[in-house]
Image (tube, one colour):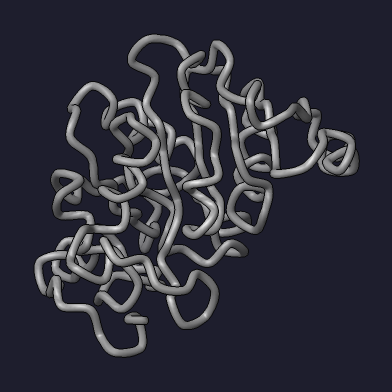
Length: 219
């Protein structure tokens, strides 16, 4: 597939490495010029581009940037992707640690709903709770005992199937975490966040989650 990645930090860079190794055609961008990604491009075979060009003709787009930077993305930045191509967002809201106060999230809007509203497209929340080194190193074939499961929240079944197949290809078990409105179940501070659970434990952790944000995760 043609995959566009906006953001080349720990998760975006790791997905660039993993997806190119699987044979996907990856275009990767950061907030600066493509030349700043020359080393990553040389290492992986990905094509470094401007952020405005990352989604061009893409089958899947991944947005992996700090939450506070989402409003800085240009309007329509995802418009050039293929019709119906799913948009994955991997972000987390860290008000005390990085992002400052975002009023809508503080008032109860799920983080990924806020991102979706800003981007103007439906999104799928995935890869937000796994440590980047585990994403890089712990993918294993389907059926392997103890395979790590990753929750996926989103609203469209066809898009979720594409995203789920990609997660499986990367070596993890996809778990349907419900609609985007319930993506709070996998936000920071929830029972599933940061855990390498299998499918059954992931489902149980999602069910145990509360929409109430713990003090550590509030501004």
